[in-house]
Length: 254
Picture 1 (cartoon, rainbow, N blue to C red):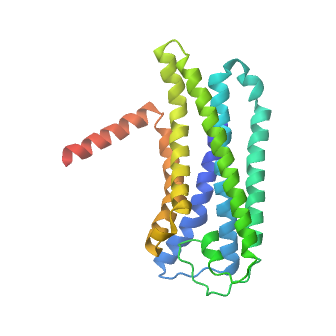
Picture 2: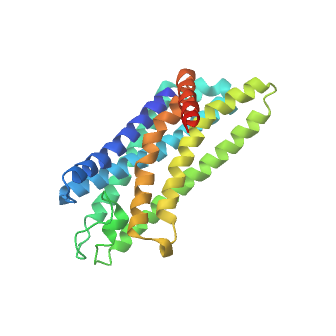
Picture 3: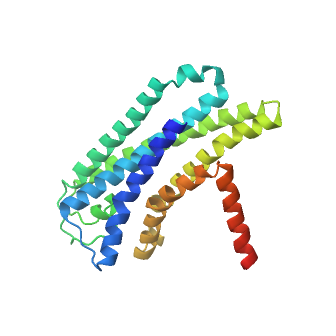
């Protein structure tokens, strides 16, 4: 689990470093400029880290499934070599996905201006600037990505159904509590990641507006990576007690 947490932390750090520093630079220097190559690099790395995060979260779900449903086979199914292979597959698939999307998006002629309605380069905003019918190919890639996300979602739901069925069969309340507590941080991180992404990309076009799109882009690109370390750190009893004292003190003051 800690090996996969390390990989998750790397994806969070990478996605934050891809978008936030440039946005802060532009804000401090009162500019909205980014070079063409810089925009391509930003899109590639953002897609790379976001894709890797979904893959790592899916692998972590399998880790929880094996640890709870097949604990006697954990060392066999998830040995160090198996974990390394799954992590490598997650990063490799993310790299391929990011490369295909970036190459195809920046092969399109952009003739509807050069102003993006976001604080970073993302595919939907770039497609709005395209005047080529070949953008349908990119929409095909997006549909394929949605299919991949849906497949991961189905796998995760199926795994957690099996997990909770196994938890209900645990005779002791302490054992059930321990099993559930190992899954709650993963469920919280996964729910935050998927819900913000779904809201940002699947909202009805009728309620779309530049300010709403900007707010949602911050919601799914910055908030989950920033909160993930805190969510997993709350398993530490000392940190949990410190957060509890902080919240209690805030309520007492107000």
